[in-house]
Length: 584
Image (tube, rainbow, N blue to C red):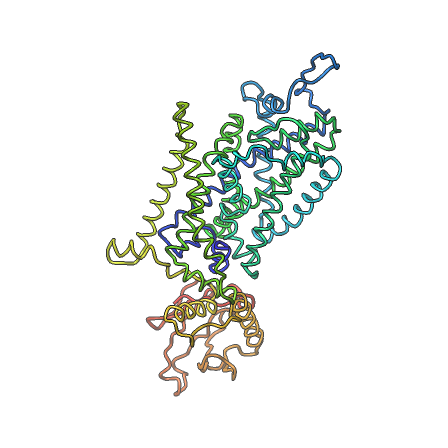
């Protein structure tokens, strides 16, 4: 709710939204980096599922390299389990099985450069990709549940014999991190989507829809994999789902079509996850590099390929360390800082006013209470988990250098970007700059002029508690945005196609009398230039009119002939399709 509201109000990315509290601008950069890091080791999962789909499709099942036949009283049996199969093939060290790492490197390269093509036009391409991939994913999952699921297994899954498990911090920390990951709160995707994909939607209903979708899909996925897995011990490693698919297919003597479909579910869902993780990264690149952002995206894909291959070259130990230690700390820290920054520093009073502006109605107290409780929940559960981790590490003599490195990296990034934000403040001394960095920037707020004016008027009215200046419920952000575009479109359609575009129009917004073509235009000039004024032929009533118009001789960007100390320079590619942007 918080991220959607701020994204829809400002139409910024995960970094730009911190114009509201510039001192915490580093939180946005950490979010983008966390999203990119998650995508790096998520590609390991996607590449492994693609590799096993190819190997099973072109060969026999079980795989020949995953077979150890032993004679038993019941006949010949394969004694190699699924975990050993993965560790001896595509997860084997480079020195033992170099050919498998080469295949994985090729697949990772294809994925890193193929998946970004689905974001070629950012949010438009993202919506089209999700509309295609999501039905395919749901259809395959339904087929698996109908034909190979075992309903009797669900009774043992739902039966809890050891309630002491709920007293262990690891379960609560895992559930907390999973909720933040699956709801995309950790990556900044919700902020970027709030200003693009959901810019015309009610943030309250979209928030409820995201919550219900994650609850429903999370439970259904657990039930699906448990019903497919069957009886026996479950793998608990980083690649537990992949091991489950292979092991259950071997033990149940299924034909190779079923593991292909199961690995297909992982492949499609992994691609969807990669799209969602890369979207805030590319959104930031687009805002920084403009039309050249695709070149930087290609460079990011090359870097991601190198990082993913480096992670995979050491097996799954690095990926598991990132998944269990590094990412949870990053996710919880950025979310806690975000809630504290907006609710406690920016102020929940202004949050209520902003959400009323974009929705047209008052905010329910439920959301405010949740915002106040969220930092307590995040810090409490994570502190409990860290305490248990540290005690176990000390008792076993292990080092926690990766945890220390994560905290140092977070602190360094926050300090660096906070210092940059303080230095950019236009104040007279350091203390004034520091105090100003805790207040919203002058660039914070809606971008459309009409919406921004109404938003500032509403803030002024709420600050001074004057009911006369309060904005009505109908004047919300979406309506103002549509009215602004409609009025401009009507204005251009009415005033453009005229015989003389400089003549006085009775409905003109400006009370300026332009000189007629015969007297005003001295020579034939370019189509987009403003007419030159001949001083010798200027009429008597125009004597005192300030000649603040300059001419671009020959072509746009050419020499400018100015006769005054202030002028407007027009840079207009096409007046029929674009608004005139002026530089004073």
